[in-house]
Image (cartoon, rainbow, N blue to C red; front, side):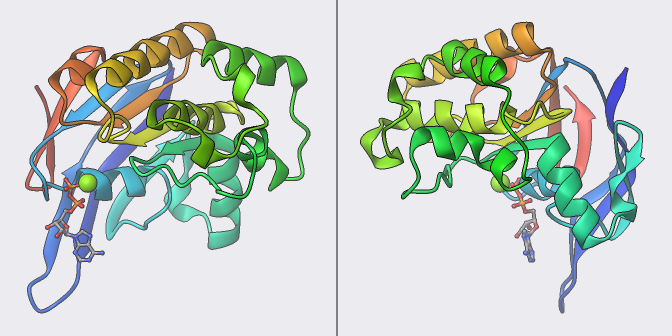
Length: 221
Ligand code: ADP
Ligand code: MG
């Protein structure tokens, strides 16, 4: 089953010298697939991820998530669709400092007025090994632990797809390897579809597919 698909997706940043950040990208990702996107700085990786996540609008082309053309949704519908179907993890975690770990993880559901499924919540925090940290605040956690909380938060809505922009970019080797194995475990347990941007060869090799972005074009490696 195809979870995510783009058709001739392009993004041009206007200006006196317009930048073609994403150039006619056609991509198709199957349910449960783990895909790595590599490429030089400035090649358009983050812009592509923002288009896939509905955070930014394309200049041309479409993004389909579970068959729905998200580029046709208005701002309100897009915000709801994003909250329910897309999990996003950034390198600089954006956890909410004055909320506990538990509240941070549950936030996407709370914002949507939905109740968490307690057994699913338990399974996520157990899988990620943070069940003992739920009452803490983000600044009382290590970088690796904060990243686990961000992963848990991205999974809590059972999204169709998780998008991660350099999720291990500021972690050391040991934490990076732990996050890699956690993504694997999460994939086996929840059949999560994951697209991640990375500069780390080991992280890329842990994915089934590696794509390379160069000057806005995306190609299989
Ligand atoms: P990457 O994540 O691969 O480093 P980006 O997607 O951040 O690349 O950027 C791709 C290109 O688009 C770069 O040339 C960058 O300068 C440009 N760019 C990114 N964001 C903007 C913006 N908001 N306005 C104008 N140009 C931008
Ligand atoms: Mg980037």
